[in-house]
Length: 285
Image (cartoon, rainbow, N blue to C red; front, side, top):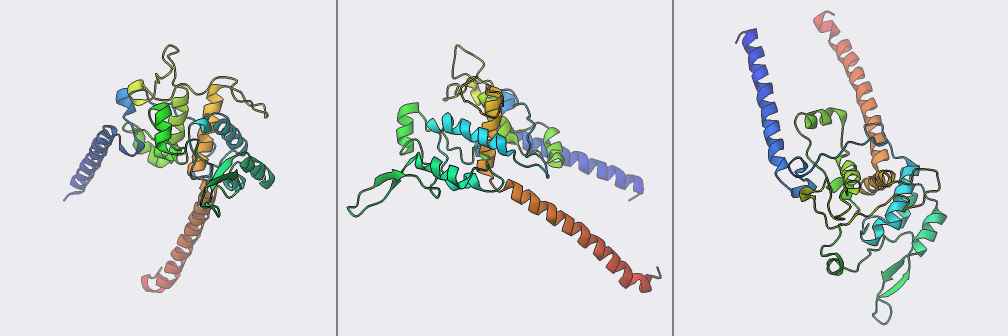
């Protein structure tokens, strides 16, 4: 094959791969499994937010995580569980950064089921740092009796919820390491109640009708650090907290990844000079 023919064949292959990727993505937008929803067809695309934890060098904002936990504690925990998070996790490095005394005091405000005791009965006791956050309802059926549907657990909500990005944005996302669809979606949902006459109408939820009525209003949660007490700020803070809850080792993972990349670069340089030294006598260079 001539050089021109090889170039043309390569271009055809690239175009074909792009078409296949776009087709696969189009199929994915018509599927509602795995937490993805066809928002282009049924609602607006959630606006992209700027997050401190975006990118290979990004990390969590400790003050934002503390505000986000307050929003969850004061508002979201009334209906939503956080089953995979223990009280002591709030004191881990890379997280909200609460002290051990704060964690212990917080845990003691909860009543946790324990047992059985010597009589074979379950009982309630004050929480301990090693306990997980107790759910607001004893079982999903009890939640359904109140809301008609069990509110989802928020432990991994920010990773489980996503939305498809149209071609060619999803290709660019691979190079920009855009992985924050979940927090973007949460912020959009919490700001999507735009019909005052219908508290369940949501601009970004598929079908525009969500079981959860508008949960947040300006001034509802009191901040002590001077941050704006608005729905927009509340939604960003709680979305960041939920992303940490879903991936609490994010900062540690990124730091490890950075060290591995540096090691591989140094290792590649050493291999290059080793190869050059070994083969220089054979090649004559």
